[in-house]
Image (cartoon, rainbow, N blue to C red; front, side, top):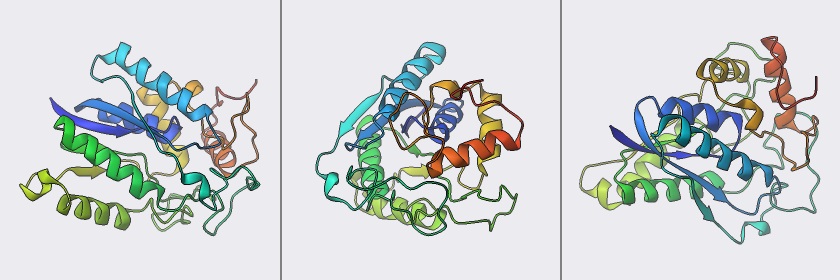
Length: 235
């Protein structure tokens, strides 16, 4: 069986991609701890890795990488003096972390090269889903480092900058849900049996989701659109 590294965030999107990757690869899950405010997502990632290791035996234990210093950024996810925004913003939001995904993908590809994996799976989505329309040209997600053009460019750059790439063994960066709207991702999660009650989308680390940040709003819209109950929310 082929090997793959899976970037886990503890969120619903990366959990779905993890479940998808396990159907075709032996997986090496990894989470990046960059001192993000929503510490709860790290707990969720640990649960997901343990859950699938017990369930499938097709995954290594979660590998955690800690990065210090990103607190300097102007992102509300790393700078606690900034207010987390309510609702959905069409422009690049204050929750954007400068160059975060470039750093994450570099680490993931380095890990893949080390363990002999030929693929990195990541739960990028370039759809904002504010209108939940099945339109490939729907609203931009707001993050410039989540779309197909960026991902392809990173795959090419990292292929040029690695030993395996120089030897003609470029590591693929796969984004299987990148064009899916959030409601479709929820449907996919349910079909795959993803433990959604142990994923975390909220930008805070409160005991329950805040229901006001953009991530909570989009998650609620998605569950409502398919008439499903979010297990994270009270009855």
